[in-house]
Length: 316
Image 1: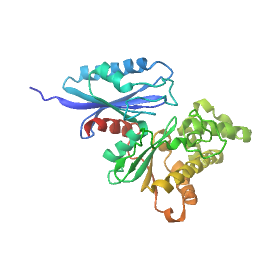
Image 2: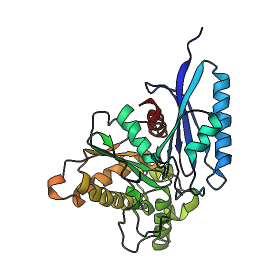
Image 3: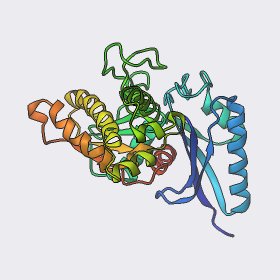
Image 4: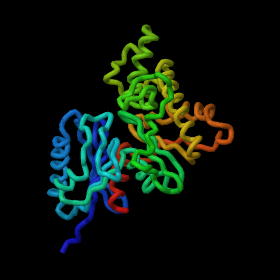
């Protein structure tokens, strides 16, 4: 008899795309891919499309046995299993754990998407030897997962770590959470889009800025422009880095982490974004924290930290 290989389906739900992977207990990713989240459609549409991918994998790999599903999602409540009206999706409150259990007849566990990324870094990434660190996810929005004293911080309602909704600008940009001036509205894909629009208004004759379509902005466009020495592109990231560093400093004052680990799409900018962030952070930290907190780029490929962390919810 052939021994069945046990796998967990790790799912990282993003505002634009959802990454999924079939993962063994040691962190081996046997297969991973992504599908559009289509958060403007009913959640049943998402689950059915995910089911097609799951069934296709298990049909093609009959020696694998599904042991469970781990999910990282924006506003995912670890205690209730409910995704609570995520700001970048139009699903409302969704009992995703119950829906997936009924659909796939297996154990299911949920956490916040940034918490999943933090678990991935802790179990399989550069934070394996750290007890106190913050993972910041830069995607459609900005999320954060916090480890303190070696434990993932959930808080009373599983909502701890919403760093993206720290207010960094009184009466600043309106956020979908109901507040104004949230860090997410300056440091994320949608935040950078707003910054580009403002820069375009203030610099109508700038060739690079004029060439950008705000709805189609890709971080790689800005990266390439920075590599070519275009000043307005450099200024875009310096502005973004300053906001990010200011938010980090507020968190650092409370938590005193060993490191901030940057993960997600815009983390691929590397030192183009993280270089000015490190410089600005030192200006915002109180004196006894200066020089003591690292700003690191995740060592895991985009998409892997989230699915690895989500899967580890079942492998623990």
